[in-house]
Amino acid sequence: MGPSLRRTRRPVAAITAALLALAALVGTAGSAGAVAPPPDFSNVSINLNSIAGGLSGPVQVTNAHDGSHRLFIVEQRGVIKIWKSGKVLGPAFLDIRSKVKFSGEEGLLALAFHPDYKHNHKFYVLYTAKGTGDVTVAEFRSSSTNKNHASATTYRRLLSIRHRANTNHNGGMLAFGKYNGYLYISVGDGGGAGDVDNHAQSRGSLLGKLLRIDVNGRAPGKAYRIPSNNPYAKSTVARREIWSRGLRNPWRFSFDRANGDLWIGDVGQGAWEEVDRATLASGGGRGLNFGWHVMEGDACYQPSSGCVTTGLTTPIAVYDHGQGCAIIGGYVYRGPQAILTGAYLFSDVCSGTIWSIVAAGPKPQTPTVMASTGLGITSFGEGESGTVYVTAQDGHVYRLSAALRP
Image (tube, rainbow, N blue to C red):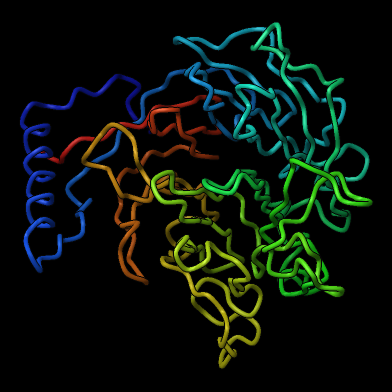
Protein backbone atom coordinates (compact mmCIF):
# COMPACT_ATOMS: atom_id res chain seq x y z
CA MET A 1 0.00 0.00 0.00
CA GLY A 2 1.32 3.43 -0.94
CA PRO A 3 0.86 6.68 0.98
CA SER A 4 -2.32 8.71 0.80
CA LEU A 5 -2.52 11.00 -2.21
CA ARG A 6 -4.65 13.49 -0.32
CA ARG A 7 -3.19 16.71 1.01
CA THR A 8 -2.51 16.48 4.71
CA ARG A 9 -3.73 19.30 6.95
CA ARG A 10 -1.52 19.99 9.93
CA PRO A 11 -3.73 20.36 12.98
CA VAL A 12 -3.63 23.61 14.98
CA ALA A 13 -2.27 21.70 17.96
CA ALA A 14 0.63 20.40 15.88
CA ILE A 15 1.48 23.88 14.62
CA THR A 16 1.31 25.31 18.13
CA ALA A 17 3.51 22.54 19.50
CA ALA A 18 6.06 23.09 16.76
CA LEU A 19 6.21 26.85 17.44
CA LEU A 20 6.57 26.27 21.18
CA ALA A 21 9.36 23.76 20.56
CA LEU A 22 11.15 26.20 18.28
CA ALA A 23 10.79 29.01 20.83
CA ALA A 24 12.18 26.74 23.54
CA LEU A 25 15.22 25.95 21.43
CA VAL A 26 15.87 29.61 20.72
CA GLY A 27 15.49 30.51 24.37
CA THR A 28 17.81 27.73 25.51
CA ALA A 29 20.45 28.60 22.93
CA GLY A 30 20.38 32.20 24.08
CA SER A 31 21.01 31.33 27.75
CA ALA A 32 24.55 31.86 28.94
CA GLY A 33 26.48 28.61 28.87
CA ALA A 34 23.45 26.57 27.82
CA VAL A 35 23.48 24.21 24.84
CA ALA A 36 20.29 23.63 22.88
CA PRO A 37 19.20 19.97 22.87
CA PRO A 38 19.28 18.21 19.50
CA PRO A 39 15.96 17.99 17.64
CA ASP A 40 13.88 14.86 18.12
CA PHE A 41 12.15 13.60 14.98
CA SER A 42 10.70 10.45 16.52
CA ASN A 43 7.39 12.24 17.13
CA VAL A 44 7.11 13.46 13.53
CA SER A 45 5.40 11.53 10.73
CA ILE A 46 5.78 12.08 7.00
CA ASN A 47 3.15 11.97 4.28
CA LEU A 48 3.61 11.96 0.50
CA ASN A 49 1.06 13.66 -1.75
CA SER A 50 1.17 13.10 -5.49
CA ILE A 51 1.59 16.22 -7.62
CA ALA A 52 2.22 14.46 -10.95
CA GLY A 53 1.68 10.99 -12.40
CA GLY A 54 1.92 9.08 -15.64
CA LEU A 55 5.65 9.69 -15.92
CA SER A 56 8.06 7.19 -17.47
CA GLY A 57 10.64 6.07 -14.93
CA PRO A 58 11.25 9.33 -13.03
CA VAL A 59 14.64 9.24 -11.29
CA GLN A 60 15.18 12.85 -10.20
CA VAL A 61 13.29 16.06 -9.50
CA THR A 62 15.03 19.41 -9.07
CA ASN A 63 14.68 23.14 -9.60
CA ALA A 64 16.53 25.76 -11.65
CA HIS A 65 16.87 28.30 -8.78
CA ASP A 66 15.77 30.99 -11.23
CA GLY A 67 12.66 32.26 -9.45
CA SER A 68 10.29 30.44 -11.81
CA HIS A 69 9.27 27.81 -9.22
CA ARG A 70 9.31 25.16 -11.91
CA LEU A 71 10.25 21.56 -11.14
CA PHE A 72 12.31 19.58 -13.64
CA ILE A 73 11.65 15.85 -13.73
CA VAL A 74 14.29 13.50 -15.15
CA GLU A 75 13.01 10.36 -16.86
CA GLN A 76 15.60 7.60 -17.10
CA ARG A 77 14.83 6.94 -20.77
CA GLY A 78 16.43 10.30 -21.69
CA VAL A 79 13.71 12.93 -21.31
CA ILE A 80 13.40 15.94 -18.98
CA LYS A 81 9.93 17.35 -18.29
CA ILE A 82 8.75 20.49 -16.51
CA TRP A 83 6.10 20.68 -13.80
CA LYS A 84 4.59 24.12 -13.29
CA SER A 85 1.45 25.34 -11.53
CA GLY A 86 0.04 21.88 -10.91
CA LYS A 87 0.68 20.22 -14.26
CA VAL A 88 3.40 18.67 -16.41
CA LEU A 89 4.05 20.87 -19.41
CA GLY A 90 4.48 19.67 -22.96
CA PRO A 91 6.51 19.23 -25.06
CA ALA A 92 9.55 18.02 -23.11
CA PHE A 93 12.19 20.45 -21.89
CA LEU A 94 14.91 18.19 -23.34
CA ASP A 95 14.85 14.89 -25.24
CA ILE A 96 18.21 13.14 -25.73
CA ARG A 97 17.00 9.57 -26.16
CA SER A 98 19.19 9.34 -29.26
CA LYS A 99 22.28 9.70 -27.04
CA VAL A 100 21.23 7.60 -24.04
CA LYS A 101 21.70 3.89 -23.40
CA PHE A 102 18.62 3.00 -21.37
CA SER A 103 18.49 -0.39 -19.66
CA GLY A 104 18.52 -1.56 -16.05
CA GLU A 105 20.63 0.95 -14.10
CA GLU A 106 21.66 2.78 -17.27
CA GLY A 107 20.03 5.88 -18.68
CA LEU A 108 19.71 9.60 -18.08
CA LEU A 109 20.46 9.75 -14.37
CA ALA A 110 21.01 13.34 -13.22
CA LEU A 111 20.49 17.02 -13.92
CA ALA A 112 22.04 20.14 -12.36
CA PHE A 113 21.59 23.79 -13.25
CA HIS A 114 24.49 26.22 -13.41
CA PRO A 115 24.52 28.62 -10.42
CA ASP A 116 24.06 31.48 -12.91
CA TYR A 117 21.47 29.62 -14.99
CA LYS A 118 19.06 32.54 -14.90
CA HIS A 119 21.48 34.50 -17.09
CA ASN A 120 23.62 31.95 -18.98
CA HIS A 121 20.91 29.24 -19.48
CA LYS A 122 23.46 26.44 -18.93
CA PHE A 123 22.63 23.10 -17.34
CA TYR A 124 24.36 19.73 -17.06
CA VAL A 125 23.29 16.12 -17.33
CA LEU A 126 24.84 12.75 -16.54
CA TYR A 127 23.91 9.72 -18.63
CA THR A 128 25.22 6.42 -19.95
CA ALA A 129 26.15 6.74 -23.59
CA LYS A 130 24.38 4.75 -26.28
CA GLY A 131 26.68 2.14 -27.83
CA THR A 132 29.24 2.10 -25.01
CA GLY A 133 27.58 2.62 -21.62
CA ASP A 134 30.29 5.12 -20.73
CA VAL A 135 29.34 7.55 -17.97
CA THR A 136 29.02 10.92 -19.69
CA VAL A 137 28.62 14.47 -18.42
CA ALA A 138 27.40 17.05 -20.91
CA GLU A 139 26.36 20.69 -21.03
CA PHE A 140 23.23 22.07 -22.71
CA ARG A 141 21.60 25.48 -22.93
CA SER A 142 17.95 26.34 -22.74
CA SER A 143 16.44 28.66 -25.32
CA SER A 144 16.75 32.40 -24.71
CA THR A 145 13.28 32.89 -26.20
CA ASN A 146 11.48 29.87 -24.74
CA LYS A 147 12.56 29.10 -21.18
CA ASN A 148 10.63 25.82 -21.22
CA HIS A 149 12.70 24.31 -24.03
CA ALA A 150 16.33 23.29 -24.59
CA SER A 151 17.62 22.05 -27.93
CA ALA A 152 19.75 18.91 -28.12
CA THR A 153 21.90 20.79 -30.66
CA THR A 154 23.43 22.86 -27.83
CA TYR A 155 25.18 19.70 -26.60
CA ARG A 156 28.79 19.99 -25.37
CA ARG A 157 30.44 16.93 -23.86
CA LEU A 158 32.54 17.67 -20.81
CA LEU A 159 33.64 14.29 -19.57
CA SER A 160 33.38 10.64 -20.58
CA ILE A 161 34.36 7.85 -18.18
CA ARG A 162 34.91 4.38 -19.60
CA HIS A 163 32.34 2.00 -18.10
CA ARG A 164 32.01 -1.06 -20.30
CA ALA A 165 32.73 -4.18 -18.26
CA ASN A 166 29.35 -4.06 -16.47
CA THR A 167 26.07 -2.18 -16.79
CA ASN A 168 25.54 -1.41 -13.09
CA HIS A 169 27.10 1.02 -10.61
CA ASN A 170 27.14 4.08 -12.81
CA GLY A 171 26.73 6.34 -9.77
CA GLY A 172 24.68 9.11 -11.17
CA MET A 173 24.41 12.47 -9.38
CA LEU A 174 25.41 16.03 -10.25
CA ALA A 175 25.32 19.06 -7.95
CA PHE A 176 27.06 22.39 -7.67
CA GLY A 177 28.79 23.26 -4.43
CA LYS A 178 27.04 25.88 -2.33
CA TYR A 179 29.88 28.39 -2.17
CA ASN A 180 32.48 27.55 -4.81
CA GLY A 181 30.44 27.10 -8.00
CA TYR A 182 32.23 23.85 -8.89
CA LEU A 183 30.38 20.86 -10.32
CA TYR A 184 30.51 17.65 -8.25
CA ILE A 185 29.96 14.30 -10.00
CA SER A 186 29.37 10.91 -8.38
CA VAL A 187 30.52 7.81 -10.24
CA GLY A 188 30.10 4.14 -9.28
CA ASP A 189 32.94 1.63 -9.03
CA GLY A 190 32.38 0.08 -12.46
CA GLY A 191 29.89 -2.58 -11.44
CA GLY A 192 29.98 -6.30 -10.97
CA ALA A 193 30.45 -7.37 -7.35
CA GLY A 194 33.14 -6.60 -4.82
CA ASP A 195 35.05 -4.10 -6.98
CA VAL A 196 37.51 -6.80 -8.02
CA ASP A 197 39.58 -4.27 -9.99
CA ASN A 198 39.93 -1.98 -6.96
CA HIS A 199 38.64 1.06 -8.84
CA ALA A 200 37.21 2.77 -5.76
CA GLN A 201 40.53 2.85 -3.94
CA SER A 202 42.72 3.58 -6.95
CA ARG A 203 43.74 7.21 -7.38
CA GLY A 204 44.35 6.48 -11.03
CA SER A 205 40.69 5.73 -11.78
CA LEU A 206 37.64 8.01 -11.86
CA LEU A 207 35.37 5.09 -10.92
CA GLY A 208 34.12 4.80 -7.33
CA LYS A 209 34.66 8.51 -6.73
CA LEU A 210 33.20 11.90 -6.11
CA LEU A 211 34.73 14.24 -8.70
CA ARG A 212 34.95 18.04 -8.77
CA ILE A 213 35.49 20.19 -11.85
CA ASP A 214 35.24 23.83 -12.89
CA VAL A 215 32.84 24.19 -15.83
CA ASN A 216 33.60 27.89 -16.25
CA GLY A 217 36.77 27.37 -18.25
CA ARG A 218 38.90 24.91 -20.16
CA ALA A 219 42.34 23.44 -19.64
CA PRO A 220 44.55 21.98 -22.40
CA GLY A 221 42.96 18.74 -23.62
CA LYS A 222 39.90 19.15 -21.38
CA ALA A 223 36.49 20.76 -21.70
CA TYR A 224 36.76 22.02 -18.11
CA ARG A 225 39.34 23.14 -15.56
CA ILE A 226 40.66 21.40 -12.46
CA PRO A 227 40.06 23.51 -9.33
CA SER A 228 43.43 24.45 -7.88
CA ASN A 229 42.54 23.14 -4.41
CA ASN A 230 41.41 19.68 -5.51
CA PRO A 231 43.41 17.18 -3.41
CA TYR A 232 45.35 15.86 -6.42
CA ALA A 233 45.35 19.05 -8.51
CA LYS A 234 49.13 18.93 -8.99
CA SER A 235 49.57 15.16 -9.09
CA THR A 236 51.28 13.40 -11.97
CA VAL A 237 49.88 10.02 -10.89
CA ALA A 238 46.38 10.53 -9.48
CA ARG A 239 43.42 11.76 -11.52
CA ARG A 240 43.15 15.43 -10.74
CA GLU A 241 39.35 15.46 -10.91
CA ILE A 242 39.07 13.31 -7.75
CA TRP A 243 37.56 14.98 -4.69
CA SER A 244 36.75 11.88 -2.57
CA ARG A 245 37.26 8.13 -3.11
CA GLY A 246 36.26 4.77 -1.67
CA LEU A 247 32.64 4.81 -2.89
CA ARG A 248 30.72 1.84 -4.28
CA ASN A 249 27.69 3.34 -5.98
CA PRO A 250 26.92 6.87 -4.73
CA TRP A 251 23.56 7.09 -6.48
CA ARG A 252 22.55 10.30 -4.75
CA PHE A 253 24.46 12.98 -2.85
CA SER A 254 23.50 16.51 -1.81
CA PHE A 255 24.70 19.68 -0.14
CA ASP A 256 22.95 21.15 2.88
CA ARG A 257 21.58 24.43 1.55
CA ALA A 258 22.10 26.04 4.98
CA ASN A 259 25.79 25.32 5.46
CA GLY A 260 27.23 23.47 2.46
CA ASP A 261 27.84 20.15 4.26
CA LEU A 262 28.15 17.15 1.93
CA TRP A 263 25.84 14.13 2.30
CA ILE A 264 26.21 10.87 0.36
CA GLY A 265 23.97 7.81 0.20
CA ASP A 266 26.33 5.02 -0.90
CA VAL A 267 24.69 1.77 -2.05
CA GLY A 268 26.12 -1.30 -0.34
CA GLN A 269 27.06 -4.80 -1.50
CA GLY A 270 25.22 -7.62 0.24
CA ALA A 271 24.82 -6.53 3.85
CA TRP A 272 24.99 -2.80 4.62
CA GLU A 273 23.75 0.54 3.27
CA GLU A 274 25.42 3.74 4.43
CA VAL A 275 25.05 7.49 4.86
CA ASP A 276 28.24 9.53 4.73
CA ARG A 277 28.63 13.10 5.99
CA ALA A 278 31.48 15.53 5.39
CA THR A 279 31.05 18.93 6.99
CA LEU A 280 32.19 21.99 5.11
CA ALA A 281 34.18 23.03 8.18
CA SER A 282 36.21 19.81 7.97
CA GLY A 283 36.93 20.23 4.25
CA GLY A 284 33.65 19.15 2.67
CA GLY A 285 34.99 15.72 1.68
CA ARG A 286 38.33 16.93 0.28
CA GLY A 287 40.63 13.93 -0.06
CA LEU A 288 38.45 11.66 2.10
CA ASN A 289 38.43 7.89 1.66
CA PHE A 290 34.97 6.48 2.46
CA GLY A 291 36.29 2.95 2.70
CA TRP A 292 34.91 0.75 -0.07
CA HIS A 293 35.96 -2.04 -0.73
CA VAL A 294 37.97 -2.38 2.46
CA MET A 295 34.71 -1.70 4.29
CA GLU A 296 31.01 -2.04 3.53
CA GLY A 297 29.13 0.34 5.78
CA ASP A 298 30.93 0.21 9.12
CA ALA A 299 31.97 -3.45 8.74
CA CYS A 300 35.04 -5.05 7.20
CA TYR A 301 34.53 -6.35 3.67
CA GLN A 302 37.95 -7.25 2.32
CA PRO A 303 39.23 -8.88 4.40
CA SER A 304 36.01 -9.87 6.16
CA SER A 305 37.59 -9.25 9.57
CA GLY A 306 40.59 -7.40 10.90
CA CYS A 307 40.66 -4.84 8.08
CA VAL A 308 42.88 -1.80 8.47
CA THR A 309 40.64 1.23 8.90
CA THR A 310 43.33 3.84 9.45
CA GLY A 311 42.63 6.85 7.25
CA LEU A 312 39.10 5.74 6.35
CA THR A 313 36.01 7.87 6.99
CA THR A 314 33.25 5.78 8.54
CA PRO A 315 29.51 6.41 7.96
CA ILE A 316 27.30 8.54 10.17
CA ALA A 317 24.53 5.91 9.81
CA VAL A 318 24.01 2.42 8.39
CA TYR A 319 21.17 -0.06 8.04
CA ASP A 320 21.22 -3.73 7.10
CA HIS A 321 19.53 -5.61 4.28
CA GLY A 322 16.73 -6.73 6.51
CA GLN A 323 15.47 -3.14 6.10
CA GLY A 324 16.15 -2.56 2.42
CA CYS A 325 18.51 -3.26 -0.45
CA ALA A 326 19.75 0.04 -1.95
CA ILE A 327 19.90 3.42 -0.24
CA ILE A 328 18.38 6.50 -1.84
CA GLY A 329 20.29 9.47 -0.45
CA GLY A 330 18.26 12.59 0.26
CA TYR A 331 18.51 16.09 1.70
CA VAL A 332 18.81 17.94 4.97
CA TYR A 333 15.39 19.51 5.34
CA ARG A 334 15.49 23.33 5.22
CA GLY A 335 11.98 23.93 3.93
CA PRO A 336 8.90 25.67 5.31
CA GLN A 337 7.87 23.02 7.86
CA ALA A 338 9.74 23.85 11.06
CA ILE A 339 9.20 20.44 12.68
CA LEU A 340 11.50 18.86 10.07
CA THR A 341 14.28 21.45 10.10
CA GLY A 342 17.67 19.81 10.45
CA ALA A 343 16.54 16.28 9.59
CA TYR A 344 18.55 14.46 6.93
CA LEU A 345 15.92 12.43 5.06
CA PHE A 346 16.70 9.32 3.01
CA SER A 347 15.03 6.13 1.79
CA ASP A 348 15.52 2.76 0.12
CA VAL A 349 14.29 1.72 -3.32
CA CYS A 350 13.23 -1.75 -2.14
CA SER A 351 11.49 -1.03 1.17
CA GLY A 352 10.22 2.50 0.56
CA THR A 353 10.94 3.36 4.18
CA ILE A 354 11.83 7.00 4.81
CA TRP A 355 14.28 7.54 7.65
CA SER A 356 15.86 10.57 9.29
CA ILE A 357 18.97 11.34 11.26
CA VAL A 358 19.93 14.60 12.96
CA ALA A 359 22.11 16.51 10.50
CA ALA A 360 24.06 18.29 13.23
CA GLY A 361 24.12 15.21 15.46
CA PRO A 362 26.95 12.87 16.48
CA LYS A 363 28.41 9.92 14.61
CA PRO A 364 27.20 7.21 14.49
CA GLN A 365 23.42 7.53 14.69
CA THR A 366 20.56 5.05 14.47
CA PRO A 367 18.07 6.15 11.79
CA THR A 368 14.53 7.05 12.87
CA VAL A 369 11.66 5.67 10.78
CA MET A 370 9.54 8.56 9.49
CA ALA A 371 7.24 6.71 7.06
CA SER A 372 6.65 3.29 5.53
CA THR A 373 5.49 4.22 2.03
CA GLY A 374 5.55 0.91 0.17
CA LEU A 375 6.89 2.84 -2.83
CA GLY A 376 9.96 2.16 -4.93
CA ILE A 377 11.48 5.55 -4.16
CA THR A 378 14.16 6.53 -6.69
CA SER A 379 15.21 10.02 -5.60
CA PHE A 380 14.60 13.08 -3.47
CA GLY A 381 14.69 16.67 -4.68
CA GLU A 382 14.22 20.23 -3.49
CA GLY A 383 12.05 23.06 -4.70
CA GLU A 384 13.28 26.64 -4.60
CA SER A 385 11.82 27.23 -1.13
CA GLY A 386 13.29 24.01 0.28
CA THR A 387 10.14 21.92 -0.06
CA VAL A 388 11.20 18.30 -0.54
CA TYR A 389 9.86 16.07 -3.31
CA VAL A 390 10.20 12.37 -4.05
CA THR A 391 10.20 10.41 -7.32
CA ALA A 392 9.03 6.80 -7.43
CA GLN A 393 8.91 3.81 -9.74
CA ASP A 394 5.13 4.11 -9.98
CA GLY A 395 5.60 7.12 -12.28
CA HIS A 396 4.64 9.75 -9.71
CA VAL A 397 6.31 12.76 -8.15
CA TYR A 398 5.26 13.32 -4.54
CA ARG A 399 5.41 16.38 -2.31
CA LEU A 400 6.64 15.57 1.19
CA SER A 401 4.79 16.97 4.20
CA ALA A 402 5.05 16.37 7.92
CA ALA A 403 2.92 16.45 11.06
CA LEU A 404 3.41 15.67 14.71
CA ARG A 405 2.27 12.16 15.63
CA PRO A 406 -1.01 12.08 17.58
